[in-house]
Length: 79
Image (cartoon, rainbow, N blue to C red; front, side, top):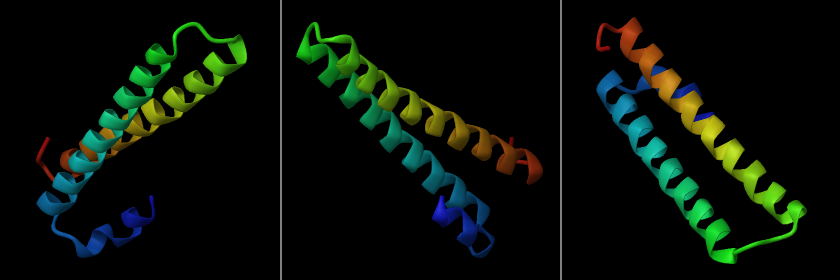
């Protein structure tokens, strides 16, 4: 999020590319957490809740980044 403050100094194509890379990293992280959850097998509800919360936070950030990319592209005629 701190990187967003510097976006006015970065060319649009470079900023969008960096955001896509960040989103890909988040997606990979989400997939790793899901795999770890499944690898653990059946767990108590509180353990599942911890995994689910983490996954929800990662998914929310992915959604926010994707929306921000779309907003940037639409405002600059790239979408």
